[in-house]
Amino acid sequence: MSNAFTEWYRKLIRDSKYRWLIIGGTLIYLLSPIDLLPDMIPIIGQVDDVLILTLLVTEVSQVLMDRIKASKQKTTEAVVDSTTAESVDVNAVPVE
Image (cartoon, rainbow, N blue to C red; front, top):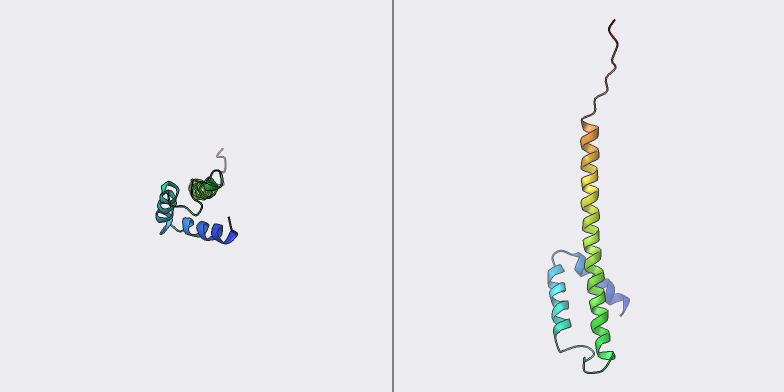
């Protein structure tokens, strides 16, 4: 698969405006009998489907991993902010 197509696909799948449209279009393409390489041709007919399915799974999993990372980072920052905001420095002197 060409690098230009991969970059174009990646860019669209990461844009939340087009994400579901691209995922739906990819699934329709995979289920449709109309292909770039007809499925009736043994082995070669399935190659384009496998490549596009691999690209879809790779990109969707990367989007999900990025979202999980961002969520964990946000949670960690919130915990750090809450612990530092509540700390008080006190210079205590013993009373005799």
